Image (cartoon, rainbow, N blue to C red; front, side):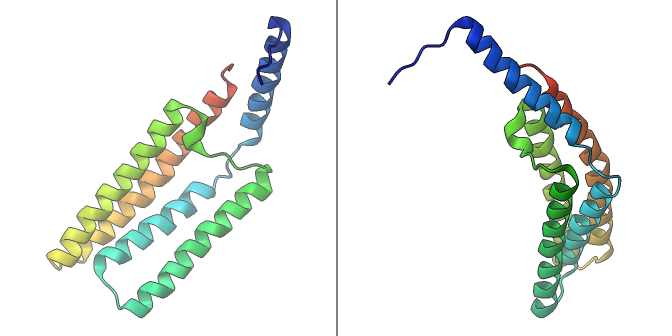
Length: 154
């Protein structure tokens, strides 16, 4: 079934969507502690992966890591009232999130190669610290890009 909309109605509908997105951008103010905590969780987990720990310890750390990520997501939704998938908002936020993920994976791989392969435990710890810093700094920039894209007219 095909439906046609008058140009005036279409413009009005697009304005409603644009206003909604702008309102969402105003609500998406990430608390100052969010990205540092996310960085510590991610960097710490990656550092431990590269050092090599017993399986029982790793399982416990996985529970803490994923539980921490869950608590962060819950707290963010509770504070802002919304959750936005940065991969679906626009091309700039998608690129930024992809680059952040690729950077974290590359650092984790370097840490794992040197930590597990060459038995240099200090390298994954440094890589984990770098992941924490990159996540904190880049995460804040990602938020700004996300809000900019949400404010753009559709």
